[in-house]
Amino acid sequence: MTMLEDRQTAAPWPAAYPQGYAVVDVETTGLARDDRIVSAAVYRLDARGEVEDHWYTLVNPERDPGPVWIHGLTSEVLEGAPLFPAVAAELSERLSGRVLVAHNAAFDWSMIAREYARASVTAPVEQRLCTIALAKELRLPLPNHKLESLAAHFGVVQQRAHHALDDARVLAEAFRPSLHAAARGGVRLPLLECRPLTEWYDSPVTPRSGYRPSQSQGSWRPSRKRPACPYPNPGRYESDKPLMQGMRVAFSGDTSVDRELLEDRAVEAGLHVATSVSRLTSLLVTNDPDSATSKTVKAKAFGTPILEESAFTHLLRDVAPARAASVPKPSPSSE
Image 1: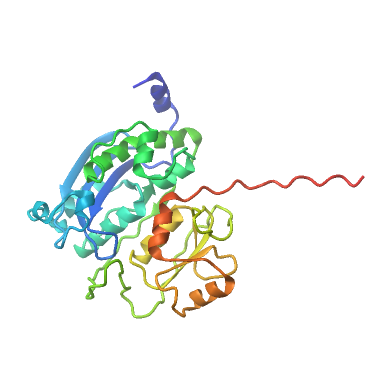
Image 2: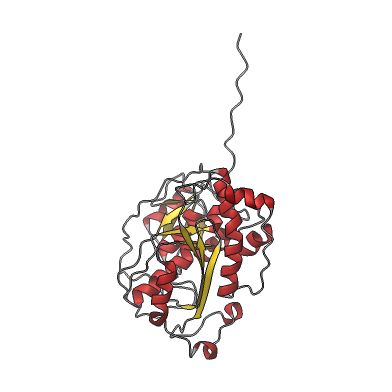
């Protein structure tokens, strides 16, 4: 430990910060509601981000492994792996009493919560922290918000990208200096509540590729109370330009990625999720732009840009920071 690190460690630690963290990475068969975990890794950290231990497991997804070219886990490799219910107790022990930390934490938490629900077990997680959101709070000078960029910023070497254990290691090593930077700067950690699923039912329908219909026959969804977006609305989305923090985004119709997960991703990226379309809406996301829903009709009437889900999720990877609020110059004195 360097003298600088020693001084940082000895500095007063924010009492409001959590007492422990579980840095998590999961590899999955895909991104949709019925996709499954194929491997999981957890690094347990103490209150100051020091590694206590780590754990890794393969998981038999009971279906095709999905994008083998990404995670490298074939059906043959996973055939003898334990089913999720067999590893749920050990995973619970490592998550219990800690804040779940992940890169794009909404996704990892959503996949874990669904696996627990399938196993009729409650996930022991109350809060999560997304390292993308933390990097934005710290205003780190990153070219984008990929894990490799965060790792490079802190000099962490990636050995096996998209291997759950190595991704979790890299994130743990990058999270510790991020946590210390937040503590030194008095930054409030961007913690979000985790609400475990209490029941689960599998979809009886096999959808076409890239599309996952919702489970309900209607389009009604209960509203979710969210904190106010801290960024001003920069206006409408412009094609060939990135999304910008503060943009008002509305969703219409069925989505491939579970709607709540998609909304959580948008919020963690700094966007404002709107429940309706108005002249202030920056863009509407829908996989059926020709439908006659009230949102698409209004969007066309207002000239609101419309994007398909795949284009929107691609843009979510690199959301531009909010513009600094401009201070109007004083008008010349009339005297």
